[in-house]
Length: 216
Ligand code: 3PG
Image (cartoon, rainbow, N blue to C red; front, side, top):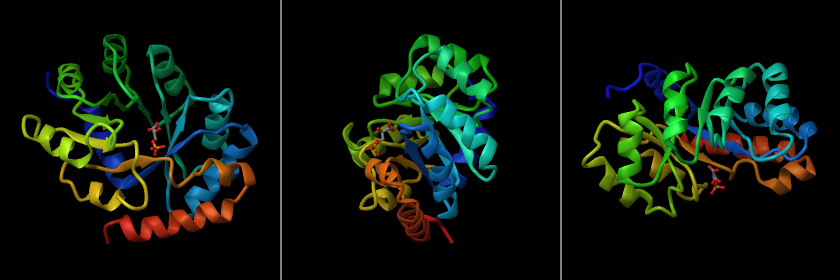
């Protein structure tokens, strides 16, 4: 199948993002100060994962109160999660994996969506449903840059957001790969800093990461 037209929009959004922090928000009152801290450090595109009871309220609060943040929803596991993301007003959705049901729902929805892949067969399923922009997860654990380069052989037009095991030490190497649009990861929003309300520390980390990673 040819790629869905909205995948080009998702590719632009990912390219602009450079880094997408994967946010696990345990308390809704952390959501807005955390998003403001990230945005203040130049990290505007955020993935709010549906992993906690607070996630939906947290995403709503960020969308309402932090207009400079570009909010996507992550850990989309089924069509209902995808509907939830769209209803919230998210700009994109990301999944760690894929199922036939999720791919069908993603193809039918107008929400830009990146399914997750770790193997050639999974990537073939994503492509068959029109998704040529995908999350490569878990990136380091599934073979790292060598695995991604190997996948680029049979699938040269596919572009990815690798996530899983990416941090300060290896983000630049991933971003240098021609099929990598941006990298995802939790390293810019450590749980301990969120719990402690260390917003200034998060802003400083983001600022330094963006200065070193963002192309001039
Ligand atoms: C994800 O959900 O995308 C990963 O759990 C993030 O991986 P990391 O914590 O290794 O950055």
